[in-house]
Structures are given as C-alpha cells and as structure tokens.
Length: 166
Ligand SMILES: [Zn+2]
Image 1: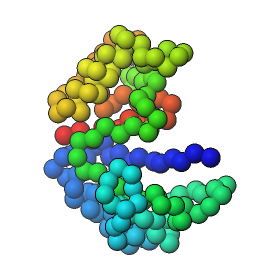
Image 2: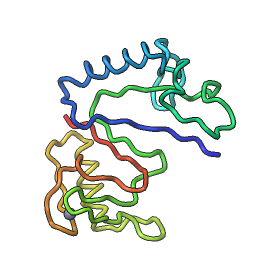
Image 3: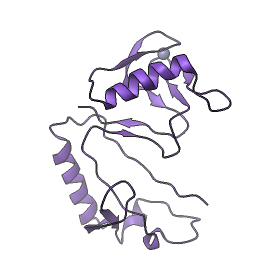
C-alpha cells in the first residue's frame, strides 16, 4: 500500500483574491469539522498544516483503508495561495491532453525518458518558464497547432499538474 495525496487547485481565482478565497474555504472546512483549526507538523511540504477533523470522512472516501488516516503522522491540509506548480509526487507528467482537440501528446517514451522536442516545449520552455514568473506562456498543440495557455492543458495519468496563475 502506498501513500497518496490530493491537490485541489482553483485555476480561476485571481492573485488579488486568492488569499481571501482560501481563508473563506478554510473557515468553512474548519466549521464543518473537516479539518482542525489548530496547525501542527502534519504535511511534508510545509512546516505545519491542518489535521483531519471529526467530519473528514464526509469528504474523503477511506473505504478499504487498513488504518484510519486520523492516526497517520502526515495527514494534513496545506493551503497554498501563491503561484505554484503542483505535481503528483511521482515525477513529471508523462503526457498532456489538448483542451481544444482532445489529442494526447506523450512527453516521455516507453522507457519514461523525455521525448526531447515535446518535453522542451511543455516543460523546459513551458512549466519551468511559467514557474519562474513569466505570464502568458502558451504552447502550440502538436496535433491541431492551436496555441494553448499552459494552465489550460490537461495533464494526463493523474499527475495533476496544476497552475495557480498570477
Ligand atoms: Zn490540439
């Protein structure tokens, strides 16, 4: 059994509203008992987070788990309100799906080695450039040739690369 986590990204919130929206959602999660108000060392990527509350099971399906996630050392919620690239924790994505024509473009070959020309477009000149602070990063679709905003691409295989635009 492996460990896993979920990332929820509001791709439509403006940078000016991100902190207020995050505060409202966190207040709601605390009042609903989904997470605890107190913060402690319960997330890997931050100094502290919010542990699951008594009503966490109302939003998380833990059917089939061998132990309660309430007992885990790492089980908390981290709220991020800054430009961030989120990955699935297993490395970079293996493919992207065009939101215009639905074509899937592989980023790696059968040996999980980057396919140089598409990796360069989507990762080196896409994700890394956007993450460094560049706005309006677009990538042309290899299938339909339309230029698509980086945040609008769908990232395949559950890697869930999410972008909080600024
Ligand atoms: Zn396309």
